[in-house]
Length: 280
Image 1 (cartoon, rainbow, N blue to C red):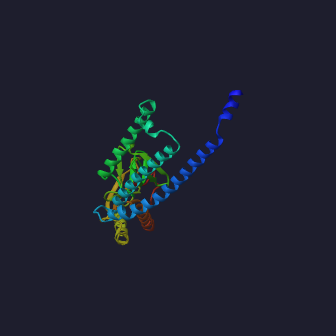
Image 2: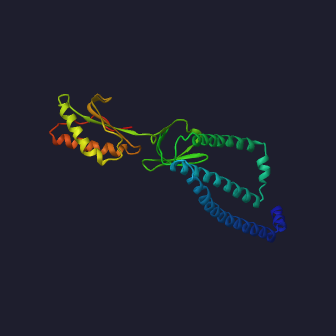
Image 3: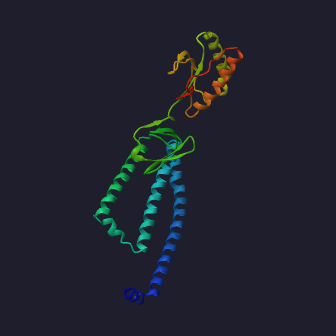
């Protein structure tokens, strides 16, 4: 108790209060300057880098990818300086911490190693144009549309709305479904006794009457004819190639048109065994 009393007696409340007020004012001024600077820099970035990219020969999707990547890099730099100045105002010896070679330095080095791997892999993803913002991709178990390509992570919006954050170093195999034409493979289940010639003529008639209403379709549908599914189901198969991103829509529309036309012509159709969707 005597030690505590002596400490309280020697403690300078006025000086401590002044220090707290001074540092609080400095922190407030720093945050105000940071927010204003960030708005100004974002405005300049949008009207310089953004417009400069518009004059390049890159595709709009690639321009958007590069712009977001550069914007992320700029934000990393801004927040690094913000944290550095905050720690400096609080009296934390930042320079000594960064120069330390102890256990904290080892941990920082291990963290930096993963960070550098993310940056290097992200650089090659951009350089090799593996995917762009808006592309439909499959990365491991994640499937969806590329939302953002960052310096450290890539964001993919799943088709169910989930936003996935993937470290760039974990991206090893990318299946890009937005490059070139895509196939909508339509399988119509039939009986062995079905008149295949009649089915073929009905399918051809549906194609002739409806293809001109679908500019998303590339070329004439390819009528394969009889085939079997992995489950052993006998099917009548039609392949329709479409512009990327349109295959699911075309599949649904033409499957409906084919079934309605076959039923109208008294063609009996069995129940489909297994999963009938084959969009690639």
